[in-house]
Image (cartoon, rainbow, N blue to C red; front, side, top):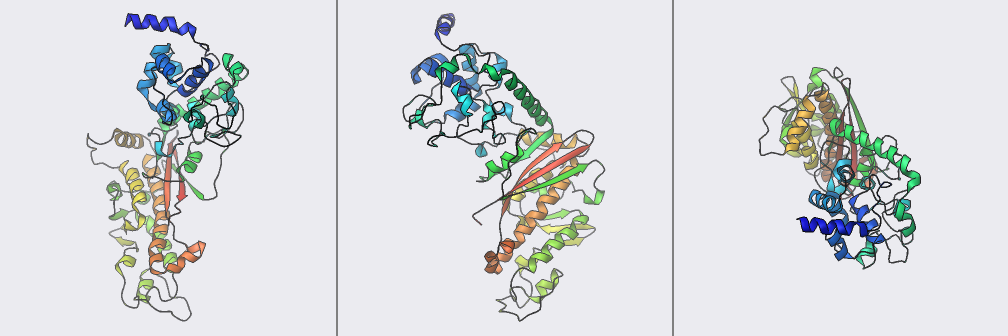
Length: 455
């Protein structure tokens, strides 16, 4: 061990670029890029100096942003301070108490073109909510600004890091020696602001993702991870709902029960607050009026409080008698002062989201073998004065919109002509849910709905 340490001590002075004073917030990828380019390192040299095995056509970005063991090894071999190393891990920049949604974070390196000249890259650049470099005010790129190829494509083809196969080099030797000292003050300020916002978010914010692959997930995260001072980008195909809750804002008959059935996260008959019945009946009544004449029987229409519109009736297509089971299950009902709903119509993704939310106010003990994140969310909700109110308000908003979507999907199987017009076209949307428990008993929920194009 002493021989190894002596060898490392002898090696360190020989490396160019050991001054990191202008590189606060730099990621491990940025460290490797700067040192490898300044010292003309090959893959073997990187392994010798940093203990990292960097292979071409491998997920370099994911490896260097997530691996705590790799971080500790590099820090020990090159004597980096703990404060500097802390910025290497992407989780430390994540502004929620829940785990990062890795599958919806970009696997492409995102880079400020000005920072690239200095060999600077920050894990902060990989968060979807940040589209512009906070200190250079330049749009972040995930490809060469000349040809559009990924920034690490040249390295995968046998070139140096940040060299592109089109001939452009994003790195400047002369600028990378000392770093970008002109923006040091601004960078420190912006990094401090983001760290403060992120630390506060880990205590007060929680994110629920759909639980399965969503191609529009990155767009939803652009909204939900955007810091307050950054420019928010909206997308026309996304719908954003907001819920504000206070400790005394909701009546007791509007609060979801601890044993509603939604916490099971599967199709069942859920017990809902009786004050929700009017909204659900209004949704179902409008939905059953969408199919063409003759698609639903008179008895089915009357069950939902709807009447057949005037005009000649078309072929009943088997709907002339009785009420079909699938249509019957759409109807919410009242019993014993509570509202009840068959949740099969909501879809599996929504049921999982509602299950996670409802479990936060559940009273059933969480098994030790279950995830620590589940136990932490329940503790997080119950300790806040407006936790129950916020969960109830968000569940109501998610359930009613998903119920409307589910009604149209089922009725679209009865009348395929609903797909012809956009106002009636059945579509399934996935909810991305962000909860924020603030001070003074106030809480807020934000729901971003992503439209699934395979419907």
